Image 1 (cartoon, helix red, strand yellow):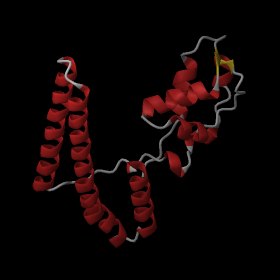
Image 2 (cartoon, rainbow, N blue to C red; image 1 turned 90 degrees about the vertical axis):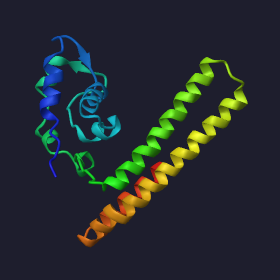
Image 3 (tube, one colour; image 1 turned 45 degrees about the vertical axis):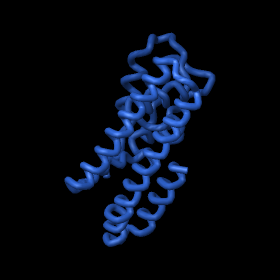
Image 4 (cartoon, rainbow, N blue to C red; image 1 turned 180 degrees about the vertical axis):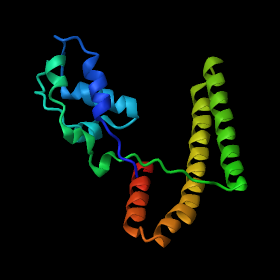
Length: 171
């Protein structure tokens, strides 16, 4: 797996600052997280910029970026995995999503038409049920393919940990 390197992004951010501009580690972490579409808290733990949280000037900060920023922890590894789906599986998932999308558009129209609240809430409940059904199908397919494949490849602990984390996020 390719590790994400933060140093270039941090340097890009710091060199764009005015020489007397004050910044904090939080601001640097937010910038890196935004650019890499990552969680700011995770980046803040990983990025080691030797700055006081009260802030230093951009010129000072540019000189304090440490080499540690080039080797982030495993939490910051980019897990760019892909799943090849069968034509049938993809068609089923897309059909479900298209139906949900139509239901959401219908709810929007109901709000615009100033429909009665309970009528809208019934439709929202239907969308939630449809999304739950989509999740059940996707999770089932994931377990039957990705998790089983990881276990067969000897990655039992990683596969189970990832599955548990996914289920926690769904609840």
